[in-house]
Amino acid sequence: MRQLFLVLLFFSGFLATAQVFEPKVLDTIEKDSLPPVYDVKYREDQFYASLTYNLIQSKPDNYSQDGVSTGISLGFLRDMPVNKNRTYAVALGLGYSYSNLKHNLQVLNVDGTNTYQMVSNGSFDKNKLVLHYLEIPLELRWRNSNPTDHQFWRIYLGFKASWMFADKAIFRGDVNSTVKHDANLNDFVYGTYISAGWNTWNFYAYYGLTPVYNSAPIEGTDQKLKLRAINLGLMFYIL
Image (cartoon, rainbow, N blue to C red; front, top):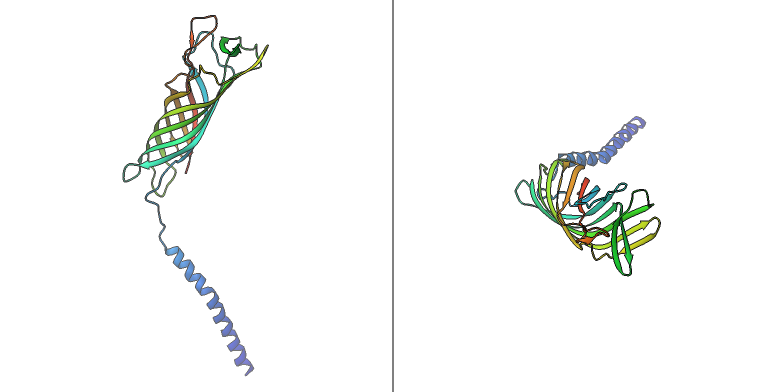
């Protein structure tokens, strides 16, 4: 009887173990056997951020940049594919951009009037023009993405219109001055750009079609300020 009892106890333990693990094994098999589900209506690159070095064209005589002029932009673009494979798309968005121009152009406010003149490099501690814009970009897009692979080549051609909502010219040297809300700056500017690359890294270039200044007179000369922006750098897309 004792031996029979031990045999029954052994088999009851084996059956209990089988009852515990069998559902887990079946669940694993069922889960592994399910085919992956892909989003055939995916959208690409809807958040963006750029980091650029800002060059200036249409420069007056004796104008030069001093130090590194930087630019930053970020925003959201609604991706709207236009073909079945979703390799072509149009994107419209809203964003913010920041521009920091370091140069030898001194801006002073004298009796309520802004004056502009070139000063020698090295004769000041700080001299920069800071611009803040709200921007509306519009892109024509090509990429070779698909629902299963989000690392792909892309070429995006864009146009954007920008509204300047804040500006500040700062000079620190023999005199210290800060000039805000300069009426000679263009409130609305627009330009074209291209963004192209692979996966995370994308080359970015922007060419401003509208000058930064609206024909501001340069003191002691018959020239007018224009200053057209060219931005070169990297563009990063997320989601």
